[in-house]
Length: 88
Image (cartoon, rainbow, N blue to C red; front, side):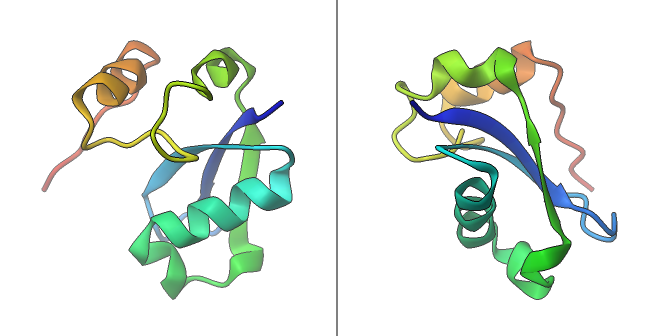
């Protein structure tokens, strides 16, 4: 069963985050690393994976192995769980 993970830059220089679904934290980091262009500017080892059990139930509805902010239904899930977009 896939589990939900919050993937973020552990150095906090990159403010982007993503919820991924994978069997373990290492696979979740790899998904996040490949899904967010700006993560590729970081060292893979600087990315952090934090379990988000409250989002496990959404693993099967996502078209990808992550929640896509550009998909209206998936964005609503993120908003319902406290996510915000800080466009400049």
